[in-house]
Length: 389
Image 1 (cartoon, helix red, strand yellow):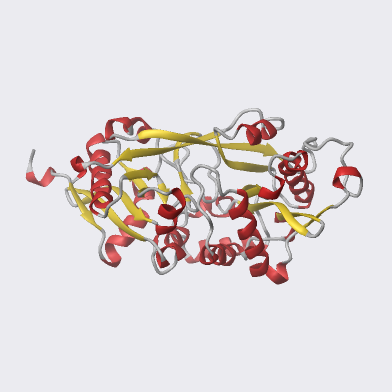
Image 2 (image 1 turned 120 degrees about the vertical axis):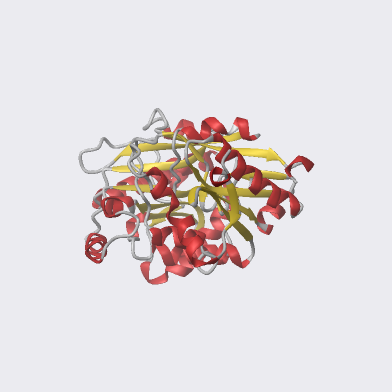
């Protein structure tokens, strides 16, 4: 091989290389069917230590694959003390994996991330997740030609096919379902008509929307309920106060009272659902780095709330109702209430996801209105051994 053709993996250092790292997917995948570039601004919020609260506790290293002076791939490696404590095992993460259709590039990137994690005492590498499961989680297996969705990754079809050759073993699949909403959509009868609030089993149950004047207090209630509801779910990590505060700040321009359903029993929160509009609806035709005119268009679309799709990003039921008949209907009630409120919003479709493939109770509920998932993502593990050094 000519020396100029040699593949080199370099750690990202400095503003210029970080800019390349952020912009690389849209340079590699431009023109591929189904690919839509995310806004660079959104990716900076995800990846830059100065913007993501993850870096107040965790550490990461970014790498670029270079050939003939051109970047042909990227990957990140992360260590999250909260995850290690929660999982009870020294699990490190890899994420931000994007590359050309070349196994040698992908293998070298994964080996580099594995070595970085192994040198810092990690025993398992899991991902992709950027920077953890509260960010972009999973590798897209199916659904590349579907509508892109906020906070969900996109990967070309060749990457999943290379994972086994790189020592990666699939652990869990994450599913996304699409339901049709709007004034012309059929009503989803998820809750038996005999169960009504104010009567019988639902007599002490009330629901409400988002109090826009108390967003941070609402966020703390949501955080505590989410951490309680999801504490035993595979792959989930507790949200910290910093992460929730960051999420609220990012979502504030998008949120309306109808985006949130809080269900209370005797005044105590017991279940919740949060939907967010899909930013790709207003940014897809503007590219990753809009022109000044593009930014004006984006601002106008945001003010007019010109969204036609959304995603349920959080849904859960308090552990105090676990194993009870009331607890079993709470997810259905939350989704039903969300859809009722959503009739006043312009969305034609709402994505429910991600959902663990192994979470059969929630899948059976959702599949009453959306029989098949329309996207699939996969999370992989790789044991870290001395061979990774």
